[in-house]
Amino acid sequence: MSSPYQTIRLERDDPGVGLLTLNRPEAMNAWNDRMAHEIDQALRECEADDAVRAVVITGAGRAFCAGADLSAGGETFRPPPPRGEQAPREHAEPLWPFALSKPVVAAINGHAIGVGITFPMTCDIRFVAEDAKLQFAFVRRGVIPELASHAIVPRVVGFSRAADLLLSGRMFSGREAAELGLASRALPASEVLPAALAYAREFRLAAPVSVALSKRLLWEGFGLDAPAMMKREGRLFAWAGRQADAREGVVSFLEKREPAWKLRPSVDRPER
Image 1 (tube, helix red, strand yellow):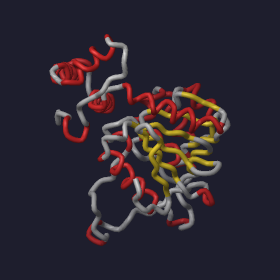
Image 2 (cartoon, helix red, strand yellow):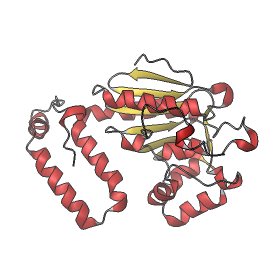
Image 3 (cartoon, one colour):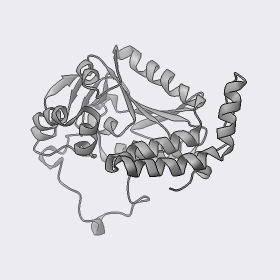
Image 4 (tube, helix red, strand yellow):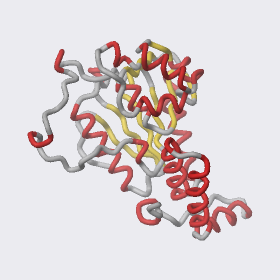
């Protein structure tokens, strides 16, 4: 994990945790195009490394992310030119946390405004500083929430609570976020990252391919009814039951030792 980055840091927190830090503390980690590109590259680096079992995302300094960089003033949210006028991209679409094959934990260590909160909503689990200020501020800037917020937030907290947060754009605290179910835990700011890292290390006890398949089903479940989900689960359960990790999971439990998983998400997953 030595790729050069200007707006983020990517480190390995052993055992098996990739730590991605938004690193523009002088600007409260305000989001710009370079940061978006570098986050995409870092997530791809983590995805390609089977030794990384989970990813934690946090912010440098006192904020997680203060939202979009507003240095362009009134042009901040103007759409980019048509694709024909843009420089070619290495990847057509960004890789968001929900698309990784491994768990992604957002350690929201401080204020998270606009994309600073919609981005961690694309993660699987969120820990938050109890006194952090959070805000889906988009409607107060003349635009609308993005990054699938209108699907993810209602699924996480329920329709009425999502309507409250997205339509009002009001400020709320990390403590309230946990009460609403938007975050799993609210902690003193100094404890957020250590707690998230300690939690992420626990994934070494889970079979990585099983985690990848279960995560895929969780996010695909947004658009599936129960019978359709049971059909997909049944097919993947049958596949998993024939693999070496199913034997290792049972034998290691009976022998009272940590499992030695064999399958690797990069090469051993079934496509569907």
